[in-house]
Every structure is written in C-alpha cells, then in structure tokens.
Length: 420
Image (cartoon, rainbow, N blue to C red; front, top):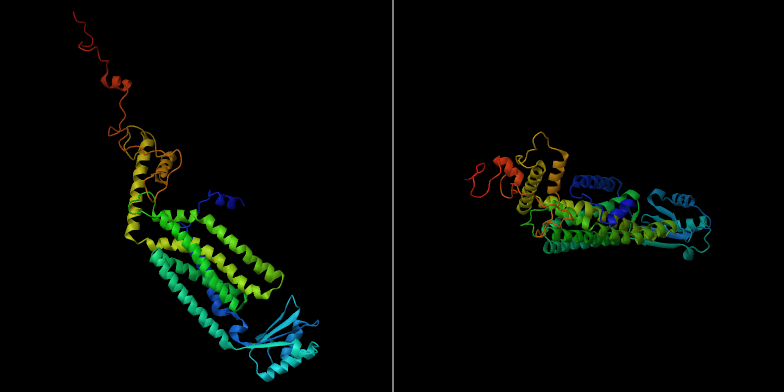
C-alpha cells in the first residue's frame, strides 16, 4: 500500500526504458509458454466451431458418471464429449460429436430411460450444429481483425509516425498471443463470445498505447535544439507521467470484468459469462502491461538509429560533461587546475556528487525538451573562476599587501622619505 501511495503521489519514478531488457525477457518467457501451449495443447473448441450435438435434460438426482456410462452404452466415447451439471437449473448438458439421426434417437432414449424422463420429446432438448457454421464465424473474425489492424496502422502512421505504429502493432500482437495462450492453458471453451471479447480488448490495448505515445510526442517536441534530456529519458518521463492514468483506467475496467469472471461464473455458475469475462480480464491486464513495459521501450529502440536522436544524445553528453567539469573545478578551490583536485587532496565523494548533480535533470526554462528544476538549483561556475580567467574575483586588500610587500605612501610622496 505504501508503494501504491507513492505512485499516486508521483513520488515514485520507474525506469521503464533503462530496464527494457528485463521487460523483454519477461514478455518473451510469457509468449513462449503461451505459444507452446497453443501448439501442443491446442484449444477446447465449443460446439459452434467443432460441430456436434447438445442434449440438455433434468438430472433427477443422477451423477455425471452415470451420464458417461450411458454414452458408453450407445457406443459414444465419453472422452469425445463434454458432460456438465449446471449449477442453477441442476440439469445435465451433454455435448457430443456430430451424430446421425439414428444415433441421436438412440442416445435420447437411453438418457430418458436412465434418468426417468417421462416425456423425452418435451423434457430433453436436442440441438445440432454443423462445423461449417464455426468455420464461417472464424473466417469473418479473421477478416475483421485484418481490416482493423490495417486501419489502425494507417491512423497511427498519420497521427504520429510509422515507428510508433509498428510499436503499437507489436504490443497488440503481444496481447493477442497472451490472451489466446491463457485460453489454451486453462482449457476454457472457445465460443463466439470469446471472439467478441478478443476483438473488444484490441481497442482497449490500443487506447492505452496511444495515450502514452501522445505524451511521448509532447515531451520530445523540439528535440532538434534541446541539450538537456536524451530521447530515452524524455520517453521514460512520459511513461511516469501517464502511469497513474493508465493504472486508474485499467483498475476501473478490471473491477466489473473480475466480477463477471469470479462472481458470475465462479460463484453463481453462469457458464456463459466466463468465456467473455476471461478474455477481457486477461486482455485488459496484458494491454496495460504491454503499453508501459513493451510498446514504449520498443519505440526507443526503433528510434535509436535516427540521426536526430543521435545528435540529441551527443549534445546532452557534451553539456553534461561541461557541467561536470565546472562543478569539479568549483569544488577543487581557487588556484587548482581544471579537472584536478586541490593540493594534498584526492577526488572526494563530494566532487563526484557535484558532478552527478550537474549531469542530472537541468533547469533551463528555454529548453523545449527539458523541464524546470526544483528550488535550490545552483548555477554552474564559469570555467575560469578562481584561475585568473574571465569571471575572476577582484583581489582583496590583504592579498594586495602580500603581493606588493609594502603599503603605498601618500600621493606624490615617496614611501619612507620625508620632504624638506
């Protein structure tokens, strides 16, 4: 709670860009696990995609094991079907592969006899779905996804730049792989509700990324004349400035989705909600992570090779070098060569601290990329201060006496002689 309070008070600064290799490694491990699960474990496809028949009947005190025994008695492998007992209605829901009309009638009669269903035509609901319907839905979803990605790529390229569009698309693919991988790992059925939820989280993920990128553009505007912050530092500041907003948006979106997933599906047994809620929950959480820890650090790596960014980094390095030398000269004392310590002294931690302070975030109000410094910011001492160059302080009277060796006499009279 203390850490969360510091974040909301803007007292906590996270080095998102500097530790980007750590975030890349974490994302790589998660994506690898999800990819392996999708390849070897696969997905549990709902009847809408795999095709088959669904039987729903009253339980009358029966068990799931009895339903599986009934399936075996009519020649249907229970491993090829799904048997569920609904929590609210206490009915059995039996999903089987595609059956012929004769097999459907045979199974209906066996279930009615085993569970004492007096009127099978009325009390046992049978519905069949062909696999072609699911393939049509899948094809339409893929087409919609491709059109969506192309339009978003064009918009981001026009609104910002193509490298930001590439980073946003990479984060979007990251979120899709993670969401689909979690579905594969937990074994939830993939239904049309899942497809709808996946398409929904794409918009949320892009929204969070666009908010961060807009702040990055503001912080890096005018970097052609800046010499205070590097592009990576300005980008990292933009992430910290939008951190609270991203967390608030994600928490507000996750709370109702978590209620659907854990309360509606988990406690109340509303199975139709879990397919929608799981995809949204994982997608929103992954979208928040990718916007902060993946998309923006990737943008810094993509921009690193630009001549403008390299020139900015060089100017910042030169300016900080000047400030560090000025701070070291001021701390060494008068008469000491620039860049060396005073006689009889070695370079101390105080000199290093002053040099680091000079290289820290500056306080030039005219810099479009830099930001104003706090109170007490000290001005750099001129390089010639104390060394006889420009900016040297005038000698005191005591120094003049020591330099001349004698006190000047009155005007017009030689010192030490009395005029007669």
